[in-house]
Length: 287
Image (cartoon, rainbow, N blue to C red; front, side, top):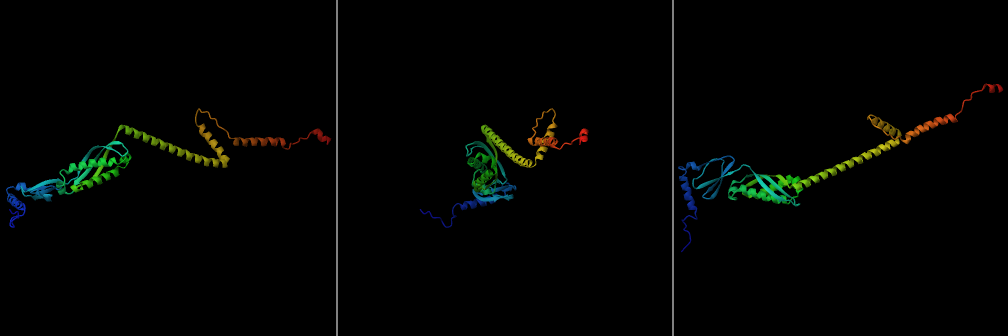
């Protein structure tokens, strides 16, 4: 029994496709309402003819062959999807709960229908696994302070995974990071200790600068002793403005020495100076 095909016979099932296509054209007129399709600007119609992909059509008005062709509508608008909260253990062994939001859209309607069954669900699962993987490789400080870098890394990885499906991921944002109560208290204590350390450093720097200025002022006052006396008098003036206060003011030895020298000079001049002799009347006669 020979299995060779007759040269005049059609090759494969192509002849059946041609017959059904011709039959569909004949049924266009009675089935005209089913043949007319209108697709909005934000959608595309992916056409299948007897199960084979023909391509995307639209937007606007076009005709399909009833019974022979079938249309699947694909939305091209940006989809906003919440990524469910995930339990993540960071690289420094801290358990956190993280959720995110993802923005994506279809750029290739044919691939989104042919290469994946449900591109929305597939993108959501990829986002969840990528979120746990990337944040698990990061430390808690990076998760709290380097959020923008993590968002860009997540967007790139998810976009590379969904690109064969005709899906473009434009934005990925880590929305909330929930910590355990004991971790929040530990971070509060750490922040309080850090601020106390900064305040002590600032206070020490202020004392150091004040000591430098006092040392410079002491050198100036040592060169001109009058400045020190004026400073004492100014301090007395400031203290005297307060009411009901007892002031104990130390008097410097240098200030007292000036008065001691002045009093000693006056008394020495009176004893060692030349005295004026008053003549006596009896002595003048003898002379």
